[in-house]
Length: 312
Ligand code: MGP
Image 1 (cartoon, rainbow, N blue to C red):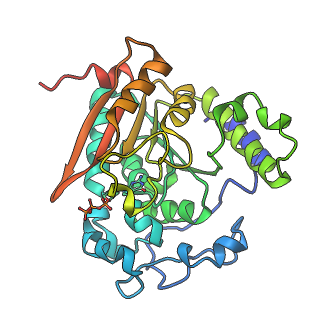
Image 2 (spheres, rainbow, N blue to C red):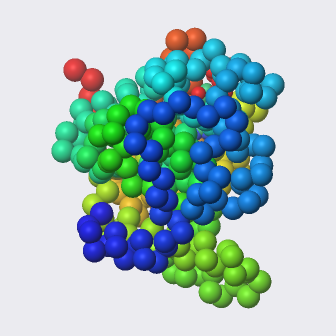
């Protein structure tokens, strides 16, 4: 993002651009995130059990206990101070997947240098993107997640952490809300919501104007129960936007878009959304992503560099 744009953004959304400097790998706190006196952490987040850092096996709530044994596949440097909340334990991308993804992007698109990590969560992807790319723009609605992303990237080195730009945005409104200011016609909308939309709209506008090589998103799938249904409905169950609405926004930011989606995703919905948004000739590459014990999810790629790639 150019300096002038960045300054404009910082000015307009001072509360949302987090300044959470950790210098390097520091030991994981046992209970509280290191955010007590910090910028922009609302009390509902501060006091919510869900957003407490869970860094030991004893701290882990029952529903996420099974992820403890996977800790080194999530972060090989887990013991060097990785921090995650309950939600992040089950939603963070395992390290080998994000390394594979980064290498695949670089293979298809060697000159790519700026990548967006929308819904960055605990930083599973950003940590590795920061090794392979010059700049990683991290967006999340939850300041604790942003903090975890920044801290965890720092565990892998100061140089990686320096490449992050962190923005707190509420990405749950339609693209029209941000682009066409549709919210202004809604009389019932609350002041707080207007503020959130305005801030996100500023970030969105800057992303559209900047050169973002790759727009990546690993959105929430609704918790560990996502696999209970045989087929995951991407229009109804993806959070906070339907597949099509999410893609609509991402295609405005970059021609090269990647989504990490549930393994039981409805593939027809991916094809339909691609045709509706990009035209009947458009293509999407869908890869099954396996790790050790099985299929972990699917990666969907839009953009010529990816869809024209052929294995040698
Ligand atoms: P899983 O299906 O809960 O675990 O998550 P696993 O190891 O397949 O367990 P099994 O017992 O069902 O075999 C697998 C991976 O999916 C996680 O490591 C995350 O990378 C990803 N994942 C899971 N959830 C619930 C989410 C989510 O809500 N959002 C995102 N982005 N990724 C998720």
